[in-house]
Length: 112
Image (tube, rainbow, N blue to C red; front, side, top):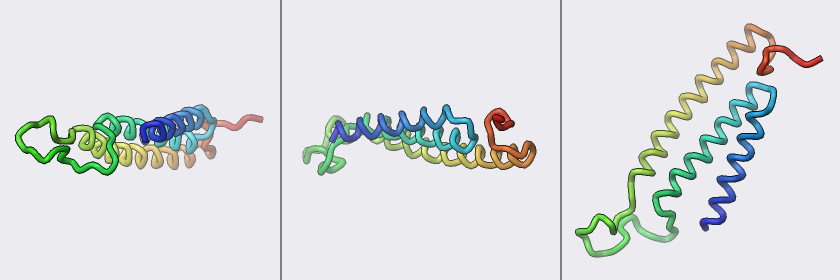
């Protein structure tokens, strides 16, 4: 399970970096989104990745070590909301830039 998650994070971050290096603004925005998804998965995986396990790890209450760590889950939830708002802002800026320059090229002009 850990290997699949690590490969998924690697593919997402590699694809995100590749899209960041593209000349179009929309591709740069999608690259930033993929990198944020990879970071969210990485943060989520730091909270003890376990399959088929309840949040309470043992039946004896009293020790905090028996419970799953809720902090990575809260951080990922907050990061998802912030990345959604940032992506919406970037898309509005893309549309405004496209309207002003007539191109969605990062430099504002096409290669000839």
